[in-house]
Length: 113
Image (tube, rainbow, N blue to C red; front, side, top):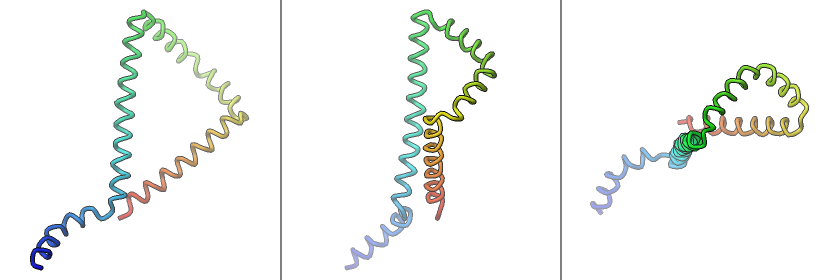
């Protein structure tokens, strides 16, 4: 009987730290997904750049970027006016807002203690 009490006393601090394993799992999963996405982004960007340098299209791409940045003020305004009434754009905006609200609710839940 004493062995069980001793075991329970030793495990008590561990159980206090793991008060809510679901919250810890959600936090760990979020961190894992963020790290995974960041690594994949860097890897894909590097592969793309290496491929462009090998093809010789790297300089052409940079020139196109500069031209697009210079003209983006006007094209952005035109595209914005088109998207105001586009049903796909409206649906995407609504879905993004719903996802954002879900994330806020989960963040609030995670921060509760």
